[in-house]
Length: 373
Image 1 (cartoon, rainbow, N blue to C red):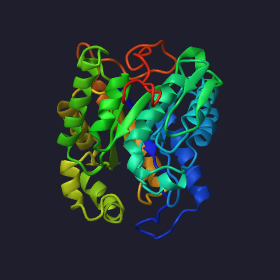
Image 2 (cartoon, helix red, strand yellow):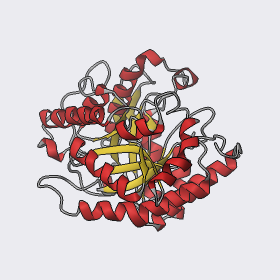
Image 3 (cartoon, one colour):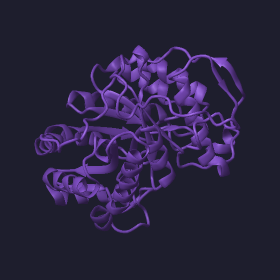
């Protein structure tokens, strides 16, 4: 299993001091987190895409390109790329270029985002969100695998004999994840294409994640990509650790109480008990994460959010250290022997295989997409 962190780049006041970092400080803090993640042996650093306050992550390719030059080993990913409001031609071009700069250390995670205002800002209709996701991804999939692409769709101008450049590194597109909070449609789309499926619902019970993962796995097999256990699954969640559990709860409580995500949705103890939120000692967090494996089955990637809701950089770096020194090594020992038939996490620049199917059936004559997915 791969372990890593992701950052949404939110600018928020420190819940204990009231200080608000500048945008410059927040951007630099994200780069520091990525470098530290590599230093302690984590596998992945991912950044979200958001437009408008309070986030600074409006252009993941630029940030990840900078990080590609600052790091050597850690896999870089988005979390997520807005497939609904970003032109798939630009996605194909920018992330293929980034894949080259990163020497193949790149994944792409697509999603619809959580800010409805982004749709009109980029000339799209929120009511068409699902259709935009299906059509835009179908085009992106073709652009990375075909040349001289002809396209007739509803969401962008037609393409006649268009070839996206640069081509993917060694002809292998970046591995793609489809990210969902609670969307069965996204699970179906990931299964249809044979791509990875990533679930991050900070408020949903673990059982909700398990139902979505089960749906994805069963549909993955239905679409002919292989047995369900070969499907590639990732899970996200918030984490806060201290050597002693009582210290973790005491220190994290003010940030939890002021969080725009968790505020008003129960106490810290309630959320830590029923959602993916992991708070406590390293041993307690390891125990909780292993329990989620029993609920959701074997999965290939686990990403943790560490710097949300105004948590200062010093504290976030301490969390990365605890991950690298105490939590992840224990998890790797427990998971050292994979169950039969379960694939490893997606590696950069590997040949086409699980998660990267060959071209599918005839193109839909109206949308220019394969089927309706």
